[in-house]
Image 1 (spheres, rainbow, N blue to C red):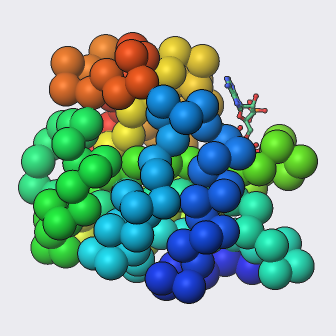
Image 2 (cartoon, rainbow, N blue to C red; image 1 turned 180 degrees about the horizontal axis):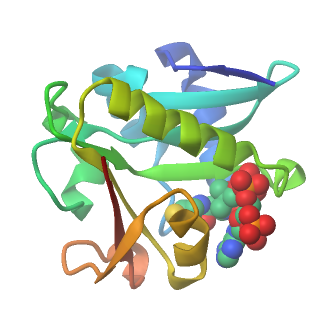
Image 3 (cartoon, helix red, strand yellow; image 1 turned 120 degrees about the horizontal axis):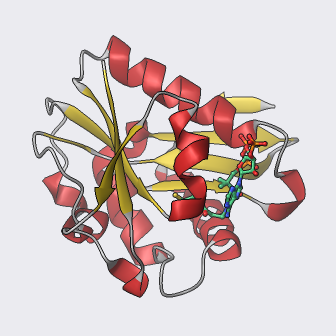
Length: 161
Ligand SMILES: CC(C)(COP(=O)(O)OP(=O)(O)OC[C@H]1O[C@@H](n2cnc3c(N)ncnc32)[C@H](O)[C@@H]1OP(=O)(O)O)[C@@H](O)C(=O)NCCC(=O)NCCS
């Protein structure tokens, strides 16, 4: 398994993995990923198995404390000097799940944010994944009033360094 940050060359593979992992109402589009890669490709961590992208995590950096729906589609809001590392997506293709791949990437993503001097990492997730993210040290702050994309109830979770 190889881990590296992204470049625009990874756009097709990233969009394909996203479409495999999320229902269309929740999935980021290829156009959105193009913008994200333009502004913060260094804040994507990709994992490859024999050249194939099988898992990734991404998110931008901001001084805003809370994750909002606007952030998903407005990549230009990325602030490289920001205090909080957001996580917008965690994906592993179905055939590679439950092998610790996402866990590995999340751990490395957290470590990178710490080394960069951020205050912490913020994400939103559905009820079923609250226990999973708690294992990495994220604390559940309850249902977000700033994110409801896909018509879903999202819990905001924060890991403060
Ligand atoms: C969630 C996801 C990224 C996990 O990837 P992975 O590489 O299998 O992750 P890991 O192997 O590190 O960990 C798997 C854990 O996630 C749990 N999990 C995965 N999907 C879950 C779900 N929908 N509800 C509850 N738990 C889930 C597994 O039970 C397992 O738990 P364990 O560590 O207690 O055994 C992957 O299942 C996925 O891409 N799902 C679809 C997209 C998604 O929901 N992403 C999360 C957005 S917040």
